[in-house]
Image (cartoon, rainbow, N blue to C red):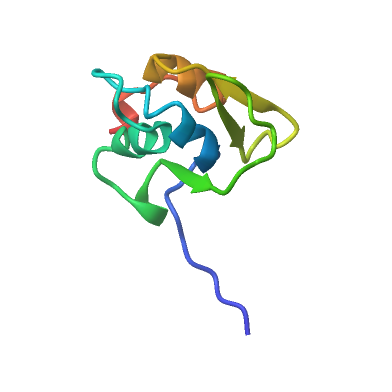
Length: 106
């Protein structure tokens, strides 16, 4: 038997956990926040299926760039992004196809 569960999630991001650890956070105002945590915090405290953007940290994605984090947007699995530490949240969201944050997202 299959069941369906409703969700408010518009976008899912898969983020390499190994890359994230190698850059030592590198995101947020102080530059110490992990990319997955930064994207999840941008949801206004909503988690899981209630979040607009769901960032999931995975195991190694086997690309291993120097000084960047590998990210895959589930809506565009054919394009993998290498995001440099210090990249602003709005730019990350735009590059991943999530769009800039609007009042409707809150």
